[in-house]
Image 1: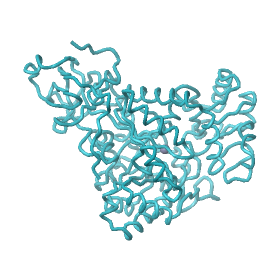
Image 2: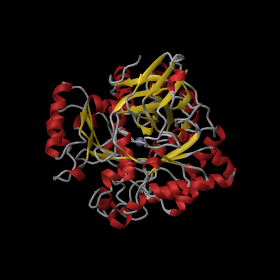
Image 3: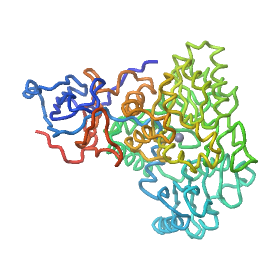
Length: 531
Ligand SMILES: [Zn+2]
């Protein structure tokens, strides 16, 4: 698949000359020997070199970046734009260090919301001394009986208040319901849908704008929105894609996670999504003990997790998507879930031929528990691994969530970034925001400092996975590098201490000064003046 890059209609039609830079190109990584100047003409990089004087008269504007780094802009290959925006605007529980602190924040937010629907996100009981989720009684008390939906960090379970549960008659009969308000599986999907329904299109548009400007302030030039019937809505994705066409900011590529047999292909085409992929759930998540495992959870021996789709569902979906020319893809986490998805892909390949599957450029989201056979099959069928390196930094530490849920043997084989990349599988990095923050340097750092040293990526590989490979994951080849002829998607970062080809990320990453998409400035922190 090679989807030609479509420039946005707000592309900058002018000539911008950048000078005084350290330009990160495929030949020159972080080195003072790198080229220092770059010319953008009508959204395209038309020259890279050192002697910019010949271009001075020709340029409409010149910006001397005084030693700043210029890198290709980042692609976030897995984003939930509306959820991210709602959290940026509201109740973020991800930094809480105790249940008591979370309840205090919830209570303060309920006061501000004045009886309106309260949506919060990010609590993680594995990081709290109380080691348990809030109960609905506690949430009722903290919110004075409001409708409240508080998702766990992995967004695969949530606590619902009594008022929210009361709006869902019959939910007691649905799998994953618990009387204490901690919902997972089907019950959680119902509660989430109900809570998100309460957001009007005005609030959605604000959430979209806030997320896009947050992304551009972190050097992100493109985001893959993972929409779907239970996690967002057709209106939500349609409005977001429309906004990105008209307002400068990171470009948005839409994926719609609904089975072909449920009308997913027609819906995806009608909205303008390029794939029936993304969060089409084979299973849930480890934190919520809904990731589908071959054997039981270490810390709850009665469960193997949840399985939402069968091999035949995967096979049918992949065949129909391939035939329709759309990317197919799935959310997959547990080892058993990965068996299911790969058996489905293999079955589809035996029906329509491996070459047709390869041409489809299908993808798997998360792919946290791959064994060697899975990796080999993904390589053979050209299936992209869309992964979140930050998962390892959050949960991969000794004694961390992976070890609690899986025991140390299985926990040591999670998120095999280096194995996947060196096998030749296309690896694209993303945040899964709001599950982890949209901050590509943190993701690059996490990939270079994986808890399993043999799974660490070199910094240039990690940057590639977060730039070039992100475009390729959406079927757009050759975009995402600073080379002549490529669209000018780049970010300018504050001058930084360079040690050969390495950027020292121990204190986070450099600060973003400016982000440019197709030659248009979509973020400017005000430091750099044009002349
Ligand atoms: Zn997701």
